[in-house]
Image 1: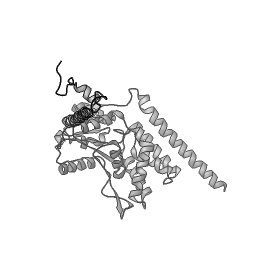
Image 2 (image 1 turned 30 degrees about the vertical axis):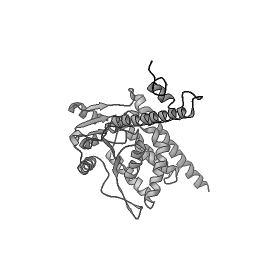
Image 3 (image 1 turned 90 degrees about the vertical axis):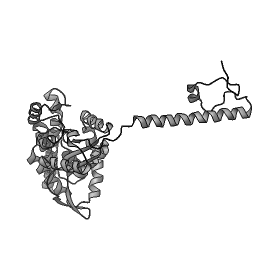
Image 4 (image 1 turned 120 degrees about the vertical axis):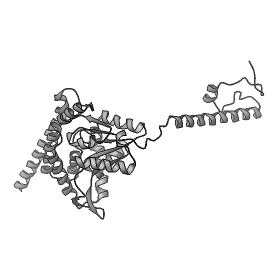
Length: 319
């Protein structure tokens, strides 16, 4: 065995990492112990530098011309996000029992028959009327609370994993939804996505007026918003992907090079198969299991809300 200049046997790299700054012999002269400590500190610094180099080597460089666009309702989130928002607003006395019962029946229709433009428009119009006169900051803060209370456990793991896959590849990911943009942005932040496009509610001096800026971000409007975003961000739509559950999003899906049908309604499934698009269904295989729980939940909520409203009316009449 060879020895170093100080008469010590050579140390293995693993030994240095395990005890980098501890002298081999506590009874050795002070100058030798100081030399051992200095050697250990140097190795420790080397290990840190190596770790930084490895981390840098494993970091995926940004892919500036590719991205992904995800619909929200029934694509990443189970059910309608605006309905979950309405439940939270009901808890905070923004809505009446009759209001929430109306939302619940529309949620029941949504999960059983898919997205309906008239229902979406009605829900958004009602939601706007409820927030009129309130501050944007107030609703944003409430939206964060409602996400944690009612939305976080509604995220589909499979589609969310797809979004994370795009991010891991250095691409940017946006939610594109008819949901109010403030709510959509809260969800995007919570999920670690790049951002969100959503329906814009008019406000002056930070207070909602109860009107929209433009129209509901739905159907062709989604495609137009995605195209404008792509131009602004320098995205090549042929290198982008889009994900949705609804045939109403065919304009957006048709824009990109990789359209994917997620938990598709019947029309979208048929179209996707005819076009050779990818189809991914993250719901359970049995229809009863696929629809039974959300339908039961929506039905129960509707009945409960209606009964609550009836009870309130009876108490009022009894006064």
